[in-house]
Image (cartoon, rainbow, N blue to C red; front, side, top):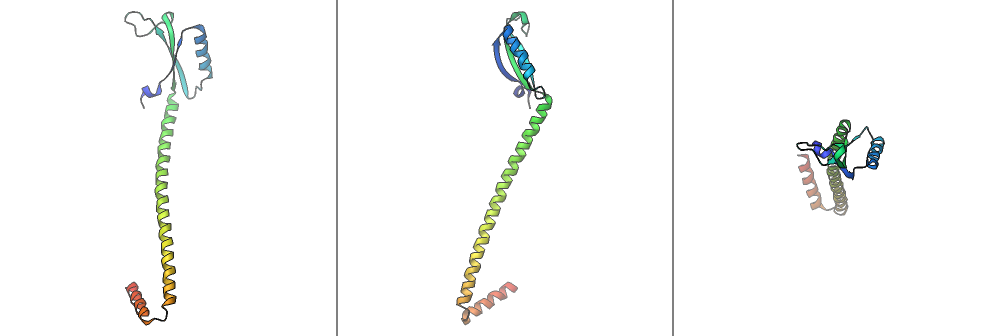
Length: 141
């Protein structure tokens, strides 16, 4: 996972004592086991400098990012979510197979019932008895 996706820009606030008090309160309140809060000053920079000094700050950018331990938990959580999704898809496949098997079983029961009725109706018919004995012979071979 890239740092870019983990570093979350939250807000840009005007630089003032109230803003700095808010940042201190946020830092105290933040779940430190899972996240870190960072802030950067924005404003005029000295020539050749990549950062703004506190004295030149016009605003403050606030960032919240997960701690490395939380990142590991997050990635393992995503891994578990993927595994759950895969198992759910397999479960759907198994459900379809069971459903098909139940339909086949119901059709087999209907066919058995029809065969019993035919046996009862044609029980004394000689031609039917010959057909039944031929079918039984085929079953045995």
